[in-house]
Length: 212
Image (cartoon, rainbow, N blue to C red; front, side, top):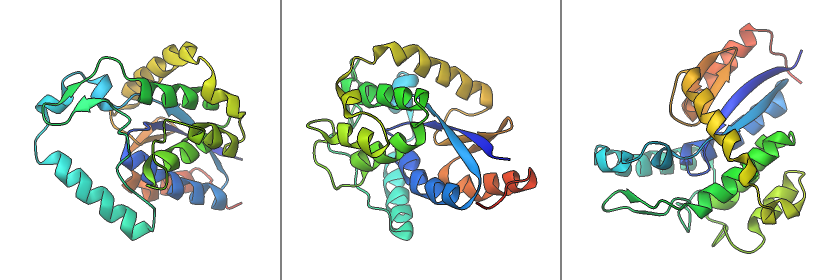
């Protein structure tokens, strides 16, 4: 029997990006599927978050994500541009967020089409790998959609109808027991962080997970 997990995912989260190749490899090896639930980044979901965060956290995040990427051999660079429009020094986040909302809506549309994980993998690679400049322009997201098995036209559609879906995902994320991403949920049990993959794999094996 094919098992399923929910993956709460943000396109601004480096840890979400770093989880995708690992999850992809596990899914190739084991019989489970991934239902992506796109959520907005914490900078948008929690107003004022970066005005209150401990100043040690951002530099630690940078160091931690770099070493994870280096250890796993995953191409990585902070996105250009940042998916979130904000003043890093003050922590002030702009009200209008066209970059993150555009790709998040595409992710929600991809999930509805049954290709959510594939799009999350391809689009986050375009954003985070350092192999693409100005990921939000040109045909980069259209090519990510095509690589995920979706029409390239998805990148030019008005997808604002998916805003309520994203909001519902955020409500479900809270109900699942955590606020961060990547958050994986199996049979109602939350597993937060790309460093919990072995734990969720262990739990799924206990529920009868089999190799492909």
